[in-house]
Image 1: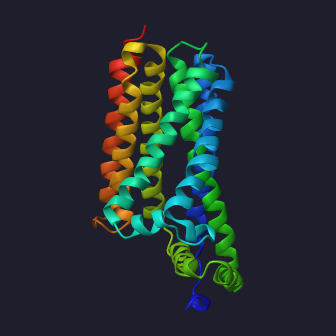
Image 2: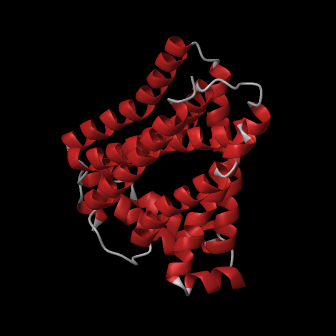
Image 3: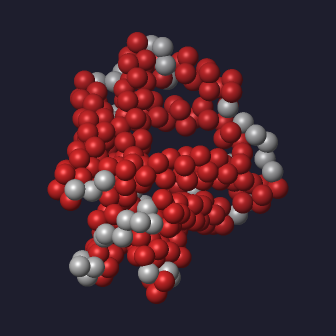
Length: 278
């Protein structure tokens, strides 16, 4: 029963550290990069803005309406019924959305908003802004919410959150209860897994930004844009297979796979394109 659980001091400590790392580190990296390379801060901000528009405003709502309408309080539609009856296809579609929307966002940004900035540092500046905002939202703001929930759990008022969810989206109650249990047992290992995942994601975003930057910079490299979509879809497909219970692996195994993928994309793009552009 949730009314008998309690969040310990160390769980609070790790959550607070997560907030600091999730918010301060991306901002610090952006500042250091800007000063060191004398890059316009607007490039970093455009990267962040592109994430906001193409992921939060476009990708997620459209994906939810088509595949997960009940999560938005909407009735199922023929597309969602078909997809949810075919788990493997659902995982593929759920992975294709980030691939198409996020890489297209990069393409639009480099082709239109940043078309006059041809120096190679532009690609990394954009990637820092893009991946940095995602890290702030996923780590920093999520952990702030977790801390608020932890305070409510210890005060015995978290049940009000569950009651509200039960009245608006009953199917989400178990997920909220799982979050509460996660907060109660939150440890250094949980923080470590999330940090590895975020570092890997930022490296991937910077690497993908390099690929799409050169796709926009030179017609002979235009193929790098669809290639980036394929790579992004493949990465998210691995995660989706686990989320939709198609495969069963430990969280650390998943993070190792994601880390290797992110490192390969980053260093592949960096060494084959960025480093050679002198």
